[in-house]
Amino acid sequence: MLRRQFIRITGGGVVLAATAGLAACDAGLPAEALRAWVPPGDGPDVRHWLLAHAILAPHSHNLQSWRVDLGVPDHITLYVDLDRLLPETDPFSRQMMMSQGTFLELLDIAARQKGLRADIELFPDGAFGPETLDGRPTARVRLVPDATVQGDPLFAQVFLRRTNREVYESRSPQTPALSAIEASVAGHPIRVGFVGSDQAERLQQHRAIASDAWRIEMETPRTILESYKVLRIGPKEIAQHRDGIAVNEPMLRVIDALGLFDRSVAPAPDSMAVTSQIKDFNARLASTPAFFYLVTEGNSRVAQVNAGRAYVRAQLAATAQGLSMQPLQQALQEYPEQAESYARIHRLLDAPLPRFTVQMWARLGYAPPVDPAPRRGVDAHIIAPQA
Image (spheres, rainbow, N blue to C red):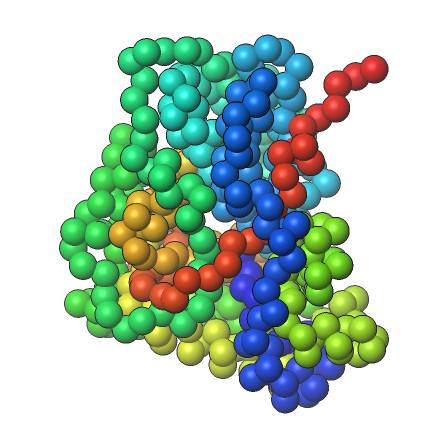
């Protein structure tokens, strides 16, 4: 999941580096791209109300790779949108499965708010293989009225949750806040942990691995270009797509309009564009007072989905505590150039391979509020019925 400042590394590096200060002046996203963040009203089919909450789940590169079939009354069948994958940075679609999990968890939380029990059957037609996805469903959800269902306190945070990629404050999260985050995932078959300023040496090790992994992704042409493909620059593109990495800084819009930014060409690793972006990211790491991580035993497709469910709960709980999170997926990605970083973070978190898998690793701290990411709306995810 990349950050908006990513755009500073792009083609025409000297020009963009020279205008980096202006790039921080975000003009704001178009209202139509953020319309999904307005809480919905009730309608004739409660499933639309539930989906309006589920589509606000965090997703790698903000691709929103969710397709739902509403053909059976009182059921929702979830599929992966196979046209919205990340084959370079997520070659085995582990992150895609986590993003299916974040969707399902918000759906479940919303269903509880309506007095519905969401009976979720994962992979009803069989799980995907370890390396590829296909057209089978991820989950089939049956909605059942149940007077014993209780609302989830995390529901109040669904429309407030943000992924915050900015500089964090130096103050460290306190023990009660960390305990609340850990308690939010109780019952899930995962291990969560934190490292903070009271562990200065380990904190620096986390920062070093994150820095190296980010640099690798920036210096590998095919992984940069994969992100270029989902850049949305300016109000027109952002409103048209309502997904991906939205950038609305005035100077970049001018540069792009003048044809000075070629999104089909990766910058040279030693260009000012790349080196300045690495410096910028390292400054954000240096400001990070704590890290959060989530580990599963094994790496099955079920484990990946459940890890996504646990992560969004942790992020909602962090939101309730006034804390921000930003995933650091680079070192967890399974493409060859990241092999050393992948091994290092697993060793650091006492998660020996292949028995354990670090599914999520994130910055954690206090930060100024940021806008939500664009969303495509419920209708964009519903599979049209066959004629």
